[in-house]
Each structure stands twice: as structure tokens, then as C-alpha cells.
Image (cartoon, rainbow, N blue to C red; front, top):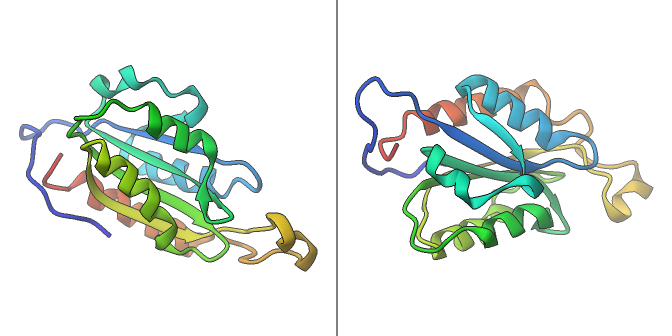
Length: 166
């Protein structure tokens, strides 16, 4: 889902996007982040390596990870907590989970908005999940993210790149 805003870029300028993420168990989020970054030419950084001084180098930040018992990876949450308040940069959030539910994105979106960032959209898709008790059941969402989810990720990031806030 994308939200509307106003264009800050000059005509013909490229959008510089930084993806800050963690992908741990099955590489689900890794597939999504590399699909999106490949589509837009964005830079990719593990959340545990994030430095808030990077804000000056990018037009837009994307934060993402797999979902663990309803929460983002702790390194992503820590990266968001390190951000200075009073920023107005556009941001988006992305996640993978066994259910692919966007509602898991809401706490991170709220934390970014509380710091003054402009939330321009979020993306969620299913990912193979064997976390916790699901491993005893053989996991859920086997084969995900697949081509359907990767196509949706490409469409999402194209929409982010064309967002009027950038």
C-alpha cells in the first residue's frame, strides 16, 4: 500500500534508496530485498550495520525483516530506535511471514512516524516459516516467496520510486 505525498526530487534525478533489513532462517526477506533493490538500483545494508549518519546519503529508507512471533527482527527495531527524531525523510516497511499479513508492519510504521518520518507505503508477503512450534508441523507457506510474491515486490518498489514525496 502506498500513501501520497509531494515530490522533493528535481526532474531527471535518480531516487537513492537504502534497504535496511535482516533475513535469518530461510532467506525469505533476502529474496525480497534483492528483488526490490535489483529493480531500483538501491543499496542494501544489514540492520546490525546501520549508522544513522547514512540518512544524509539517501532519499528514502526501507526497513524490513521476517516476522518473529508478530515482531520484526530485533536488529531492525534497534536501527529504527537509533534514528534521530524530527526527520521528514520518506520511508517504507516490508516483511515476510508465514501469513504474509501487513498488520505486522504497523508497530514499525508507528515507531518511524513518531520520529517524524513520512511513511509512504508497506509491503508484506508470505515466506516459508518454520519458526518456533511451526517446525514440528513442517512449516507453512512452503515455496514462498515464489514468483508471485517477487512480482508483487517489483511492482511495490516501482510505485515507491514513482511516489510524489521523493
